[in-house]
Image 1 (cartoon, helix red, strand yellow):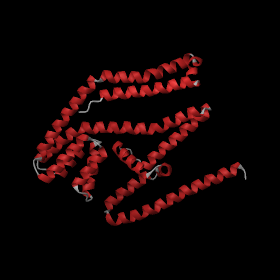
Image 2 (cartoon, rainbow, N blue to C red):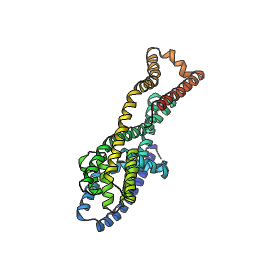
Image 3 (tube, rainbow, N blue to C red):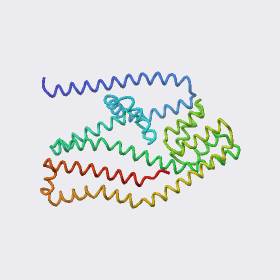
Image 4 (cartoon, helix red, strand yellow):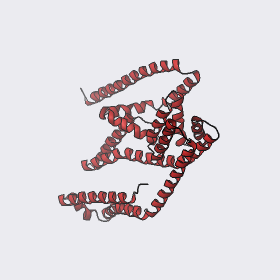
Length: 323
């Protein structure tokens, strides 16, 4: 049998395997849809059908990512990744995200290995391409958390004023959802939806706190839970928390200004060796090539990178002052 025939048979086997998994999943979804039809009203059912129709176009590619993630990852890891994706508001499952990391790593490593012909460069590209999705996740999560913390002070003021006007706690949350944009509007909307579907208020608030991962929100949720158990003036408590959060934001801004020089020093220390290495390589490749071709040179490069990372970590620890 020729190599072409073997390749065709392997392709068909993989295609039929993925198709079979999709059919099994489709059968489960049909059972779930039948149950949902008996529970929800026509309006909710129409909304669910619209959402499923919008997602059907991207389902095939996401199935491949999910399959790759399930083959090479454990269930505990995917649960942690699910929490991180929820905090970053990325509409992917843990298996799909891990599958994308795996495909990016293998694809990048294979691509640069074929181009350069050197396995070492391919290994470096494999690690770098596999780290890129994780780096993007961290950046996205950090930006969303900063936006949420910037909005929570205004949200508490709206809730406190709504409570003084005679609104209930749920109506005050709904007012925040309507008046303030995302991400806080989305999180409050999800919490309200959980409450409307029968989830206890305490559990819905704790779920929102775990999804966001904000210390300020944890403080608010704790105050609300204590007030619901022992009573008290919730509007006044929210005002006090809002003032505390504003002061914390102000102090963080002052710290960021005072540590600007340290952050710039860390950036220069991190980028200067890379910039100099690239410039020397462009001007005189044979001069710096000895550094990467001999055992002594590679050992020096290893320790240089190690101490470089250690120095940046120390500078980062110095300029990060908890408030």
